[in-house]
Structures are given as structure tokens and as C-alpha cells.
Image 1 (cartoon, rainbow, N blue to C red):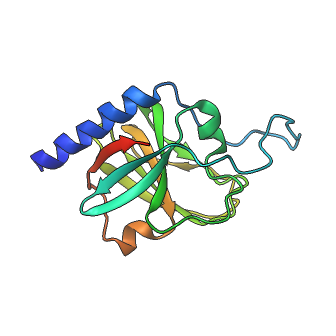
Image 2: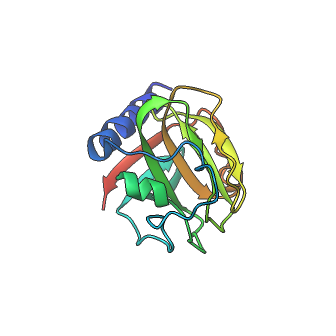
Length: 166
């Protein structure tokens, strides 16, 4: 466990150093007014980073800026099996994600500051209901193809270790 914590800490340091100031909306906006600033298409592929979850290697896009986090996986129509999108949150707190304009079924892991997965939730396409973490000790979120964690026997309390950002 000591080794896993050390790798988790490396994730926190590496991603926090690269990605401070990120934000994703906590809940959908109210009303039905169309915002002209809202995205209408998928964002280009973001810079990637290798993560290891146990023995599993995953290539993750890193949503570093507020706009990258806001758009996230919106409008994307495919996602390879061992890929994900990592969201370094601006502060350690309760996390909240939704699936506005996202046609793909996803799973999300809420990860603490040490890089340890605390919760895993399934997200349904286009669902604008917020999926809140039970914990208020969340610093990162990792979106994957739905069911990825189960297919790879990754459960709560696994540590994520980073490599380099490309």
C-alpha cells in the first residue's frame, strides 16, 4: 500500500502542477435559454498522459483549462477501450459531473488527492442530472468507457500512477 500511495501522490503532484485552475460546472444551468457560448461540436483531442491503475495502462486526455473541462466528452461518438479523460479539479471537494450533449455511456472514478479511487459511477448518455460524489475529498475525476473499471477488475481504493503528458 505504501508504494500505491507514493504513486498516487505523484499523480497529485504531476497533474496539479500542470493543471491548476480547472473547473467543470457542478450542475446544469437552469432554464431553457440557448447560450450562444455553448459548444456545438466535440473539442479536438487534448494532450495525453499515461496512467496506471494497478497493472492496467490507460492513455488519458487531460482536461486542463476551464473550457476543456466544460466541454469534456461532449459530442464525442467513440472512445477506445483503454482511453479516458482526466479532470484535475480546482480544489479538493465534493465532485459533480453530468452528461450534457454526451452520446457515449461512460463510467467515472472520483479520486482523492493521493490518487486513490474513492468511488466509481456509471453515467448515462445525455443525462443532465448531476452525479455527485459521496465524499468531499475528491481532487480528480477520470471518465472511461462505461464498464471499463469492472472489465479490468479496478475497484474502489486503487491508486493511479502517472507518467508523462504528451
